Image (cartoon, rainbow over all chains, first blue to last red; front, side, top):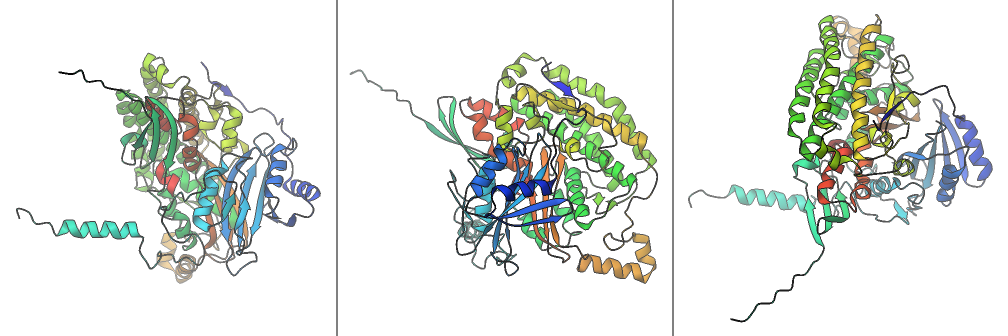
Length: 192
Length: 396
């Protein structure tokens, strides 16, 4: 049988404390780190967006950190709460060492561009497309930046806080088309 | 009559697969560029089931957003609920009592078995083994009946609650479930006898959709899809939640990283889930099923009907929501498909400021082009089956 049952034995991994990891990032990129916050044992490191790929590459390649698994990538809109308005949040995890860190890159409203991390983790591809779709953040160097969940000709970015919950006032053209089709079929007379 | 000379030309074809195709497990649309029978390029299109669950969740209180999570992975809604309540509990800073944790672990594993049963049924059906479908649905029906017994619903259960579970399990339920765990191992053998050494099955699955361990991690794959490549990553072991640190189980991993190994992994997971359920029934402790945290959990129904204070408390919790500390949290749980993560940003009000769902199916669907290119068109179907996606969860 090709498949074996693996029993997880005594710990043979080097788990680092999240604050320790944050210190390490701060040491390596002193000018980039804006702040380090901690909540319920989870540490977030807020960084400037310019060298995000360098930071991610370092976190991925350093043998002690070894963040090989990009758990999640998403955007957050802090409209009227914080400046700059947007943040791109990276949740990183090391399968070998079993530690986690949250990286947050600040993206101001007047410059919605950030470098893509698809060169570090291929799996970031669709996450970045979704972030572009929902928040309008443009990922430079992304291989195929298109809308993913919404239709291609949709206007606006739904997860922004100033986007109405019930949708835009002007209906999406594809939807109008469907309604008109339905009207047309309703008027059909049998046997005419 | 002159001879007609015909020049046969060959060119690449552009074929639409889906969105209404029974083998795409929902509404997944693939645009295939094919050269003869060989796939040259695959472009997946998702989003046909997008309902804006993240946006809706940001406009509802934490209690109200719970039923939304059923509608993501509707095949194993129990594990989605468990993922949600675990994240919210961590954010609130409360903990479910021991009995509730064991019950959650138990029903979560039931959901895993029922999800894997549906997977083996449809995956085998896609490849051409019809009989497995009928056998697998027999056991799935039993499990759905058990779900109905504890909460009245078969698919969209909403059984776990923030701070515990909705109601206690009856002895009748436990007896029936124990009987299930007695009989289920022999039923697994039924499926394996049908396909495990079947020559057609081996031809269709061995060496199809191979992905190496490093590449699978880099793509962000999780769950049995990753473990088939030989990577030991299981959220239940790495960061245990509920009662997973109190039960004994192994994590099956594959070696080749092909469709067959992923199939074997899931077959072995059946047995491990069965083991976990048995242990949960045997070790089930007595005690309350809801956490004693009146600021964060809804009061019991019979108290609400009797006195004013509990009624007021219920009213405020439902309309305004609890006073949640400011902060952000990411909690992952292991659902049948992989790692389901919830990321909450709280601004101190009763509604999440940002609710993000990291859906395993979304990541798994993105790997399809990597698995399919270079194989035959028929293998695309095998690959859709092996990554085990549910489009409700993928599109959210």
